[in-house]
Image (cartoon, rainbow, N blue to C red; front, side, top):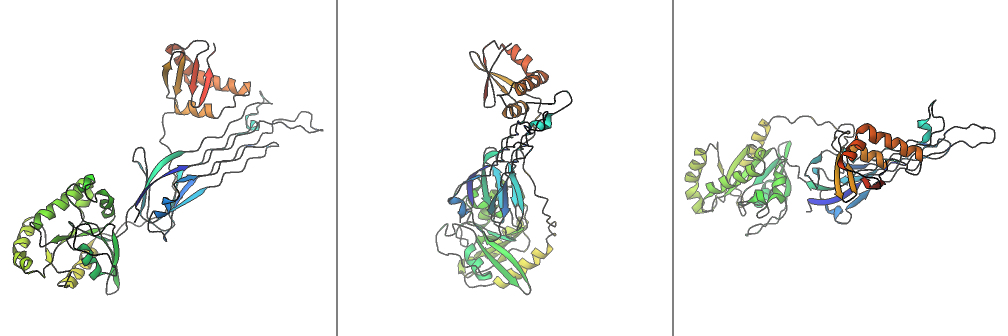
Length: 422
């Protein structure tokens, strides 16, 4: 099962606003008529309940939405770019690859979120007309879309997780209490991917997951490490299965709980039913009273002993499982919001910094000023003058002078290289 992938997403750029004027035979004083650019397409992640793995992303990792079209003459607006819908299985967590920030946690069928919002379309010159400037040669270019690498992480959605060291008998137990048919063998890490099964009692059912064996250092990735610890996070309670034939089952119990807590402190707080397996073996029967006493001394109420192989006490475990599960508090009702949207963190738009790159070269860094530069039509003197006024208003001009900028020096703002002139 592929449960983690890295993909690239890019929303569409907004279309450029147009600079145009009416040129009709019987309209001698036709005004500005440049239309607005279209909105860039969004990147939308949506839950597809028919998917249960991230395998489809092995063939495609780049997702780009369509750009908005340029505005036209006669105040014609450009078409909006088409959205791209990326389908993911239930239980998918989406996080930024650069800083690990969680952007979305998609659980329910049909749930969707806009991960990358398309750029806004630029305004045409008809939007800039005023009594003082009735024929403006100013328009906005479209706003760039958002592009980033994201990590998709699939976390199984199960009510109960079976955890324990390798060879504790987790897969065998799952196979006898549910409809699951996991691979079973007598060597460590038989289970290389989690298995799901449905346990039924009377008219109720519970989804149970067999989580691959955890070893010391799992929280740091040792053994199968975080590849499977993440699947425990969604479970509401745990069955902690101990190998009765182990040298020290209680030490295994402590180790697994430590690994859970080190990975995520909330895991160690989940309700647990502690079960010693392999009671069909004479040596386990002999040791059981000692193990039971040691577990009770650690605050474990009603530890159980079973044999997954012979199904000894398995029915009692199923009854206990449903009994304890029924005591859990109701989960909060889930409501799908109106298309949640992830947006880049807001910064103080007026903040900027001046970096000296070398002899006669400077770079201005700042969200607002870079965005304004990207949307400026440099071919039109009026648009350049408007941008210059913005530099003055924000204090960029004065800051560059204090930094030592001279006539003819290069000033970089975003992807634009400008020549300084006094």
